[in-house]
Each structure stands twice: as structure tokens, then as C-alpha cells.
Image (cartoon, rainbow, N blue to C red; front, side, top):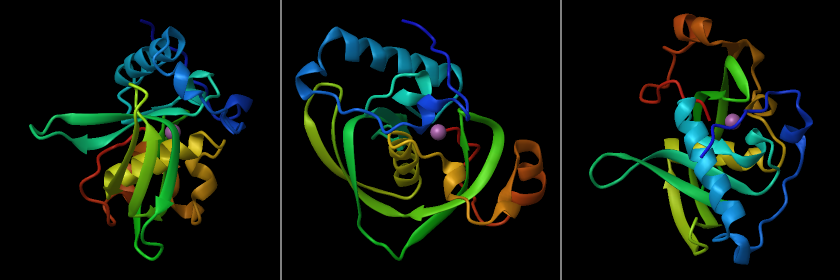
Length: 184
Ligand code: NI
């Protein structure tokens, strides 16, 4: 187990289109070790999600949270080679996003509120599920990382791009209520 170094904006590894992982390799040591280290790294830095390129490993693997299990505990999904289908182009959800690779900043981003996700899980099983609301935002943010896209690329109103303290003080009150300071 290891806490990995997180790449920050400007590092080219965050701008690459990441490579697919062969499904047969998912249960192998290399991928399993990476998943474990990514969980440890995400927990250490209070992330709600983390993508492999953020830890200098440009493969199509991400961890996405924001959901709760039946007991109300946080649920994290491992997404390998994920594919997203937007289920409702018109319904958008906006929030101030943050990113462990863009420390100290927050920016207002609007994304589709409901998506269908197809991905391999950590056991190598292909899964399909629908996400709505905050978990849908987290998953889209993480999947963007796999294509070299950062949330800052999706900010359309730069007056809503601010340092965390100023965002909390002057901007946060606007519309998003439930979703806490999310580092994705
Ligand atoms: Ni991020």
C-alpha cells in the first residue's frame, strides 16, 4: 500500500487520452495494486473520486463516490474502461467542483444530471447502471480525466471560478445546497 503523489494541473499526464486496460488484466497484481493505492491516496486527501492519470498512471481507471449504500455509508465504484451515455441532454446540474489536481480552487460547472454508465468493476465484471445527481457529476468529472479533460475546461462563466475560501464566502450560497466541498 502506498499514498501516491497527485499530479497537478500543468503536468502533461493530466492532458493525455488514457489507454484501455485489457479486461483479463483487471484481477492481476498490477491493476489491483493500483486500485488499492488509489483508494489509499483518495482517502488521505479527502477525495470523493480519483482517476488514475491523477496519480501519474494514464490508464482508463477511476474511483467515483458520491453514493451511499443501504446503510448510509459512502459507496465508491471502481470504473475501468467506463463509457457514459447521457440520458437527458436538457436537464443539467450545476455545482462548484474542485479537483485534487487543481488544489485550492473551485469552479462552477454544469453537467447532465442523469447518465448511464457501462464499466468493468474491480473484479473484472462488466456492469451497467444509472446515476443521477451528485454521483452522476462525480463520475463525469472522473471520466473526463481519462480523456485529459479538467473541470476548468468546462467553466463557462469565469466569474464563478475562485479560490476555495472566496468561493465559500461569496459564491457558494447561490444554488448548490447539499454538496459539500467535493475534491474530485
Ligand atoms: Ni479531478
